[in-house]
Image 1 (tube, helix red, strand yellow):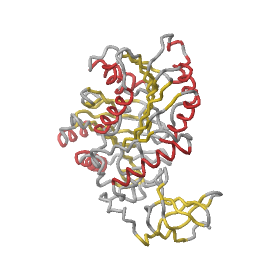
Image 2 (image 1 turned 90 degrees about the vertical axis):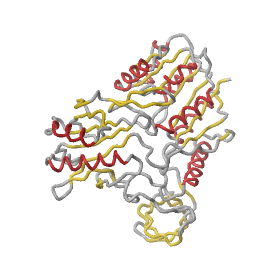
Image 3 (image 1 turned 180 degrees about the vertical axis):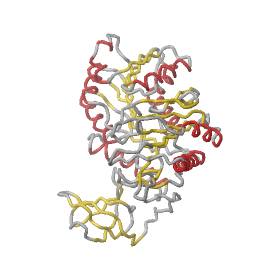
Image 4 (image 1 turned 180 degrees about the horizontal axis):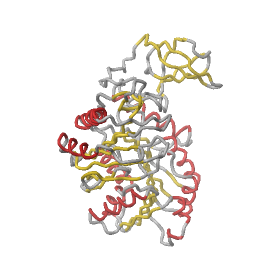
Length: 451
């Protein structure tokens, strides 16, 4: 069956962004294709309950299809839905949330609001990571991953999700590395030097950070790099060098050096200023983050007497903003750099009723540090894997009256919601927010109540 060419009618889009068709009573998940299209596809994998395929030719085009403006579309691993009209992107994202709540959470009586679309469909990201990759001709590429491949990088010309200035910085760094013959890193043999370029750009302040991640050692031409970068891009307020010998292919260093500036940029969210460092987590869409937080607070309705526990708090943004409306906030975060940034952020904003604790959420909830004073609100904004099961059980044992759950993964949200339902919590409504247009990713907010 594999490598067989078949004609298929696409009927839907799945949670992971793949198209859905049927063949001989089995579901087929396809790379490429939109609902309403007839395609010629190649079966690439046959499983017991489903097949996987790649669209080779579109025989009948969908009315939902538009021309993707990005010149890298179809090659790049991001923006898989750029050829789908935006209002339909929103419809399919909302449908995915509904499917997860029903199939995984077994939740049928929750009010699911219409998804809130993004104000900006392009140029909305405040952070982009680019990889160096050696090629067979003793040269290198600097860009993004080919779709579905960890070991193939294409040379970026322009990414429509970042600013024009950030795109020009990518070209500048590529040219600089070529002119000075600095070797790119080989992820297979673990040789070479240049590994990643990370650009962070604050949307409200316009400040830009350039972060270069390398193998161990100093950048050999760092004086020339500093001079040329500052001359070409006065918007760049700091240049950071992260070095690491770790083989894992992630853009984080073991040791950090600030080559100029103060090693951070400032962003503004809902009138509060936040310091963002090279390795700090911060919501990637600054403008839509304000929409997200407003919607969260509208659902939560905090009270001046509330005591709040903010878990997975990152650099403290939501805890700092909500501190104005409550009595006390305690934030818990595992990453030491994020905790340090959170404390600086609280100080910079004159917030005195918040405390940040460095530690694993599940361990903190088990420790004596929680204390005997109950929390009125627990906020969780976990990674895609959702709340750690042990941590969720310990939150339930605390019996907070309200749990604000901000999720970037409807599947794990629905799983955790089912656990909270069994423990006696109810979820009246869910609000989806589109933070990442042209991708299948979706954020959602829900407040669980214990009666």
